[in-house]
Length: 192
Image (tube, rainbow, N blue to C red; front, side):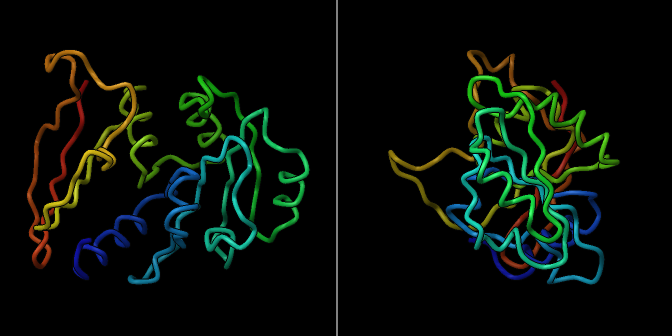
């Protein structure tokens, strides 16, 4: 949806973080590589939240030299996990789930144990919502393209539980606006 300048900047953001994280829905829908191929620099550790180990063995995120962590839940198919463990640069980590989703607090503890201290959460909607719901997001990067889309079946940018009152919402403070070609990037710290 965004142009080349915004796309390149998103790869810069990947480069400056230890890891990049998406959910299985993003992998199944978009088949991303999650590398820094558009900029010079190290690839982040790629993290896929996949509570049931549904990731296809052909997924791009499982290919190449960048390390990949597949985070599964206790109900994940054991054979699928064993097959993933045999892949080059792939590690399977099983963590507890809450309401069928990987526990964000258990995930962050595990990432700390893997010496991963900065994570770029690229989404999708439900994953972003999980980090906001658990109040563990500390910065937001929102790319905005000058395109209007929507519809009754369109996914929101951020899913999760949501809020009942505006007084309960997370707030972006110290906002910055960056123009990237025809697109914009709004970034700032998140407070709860």
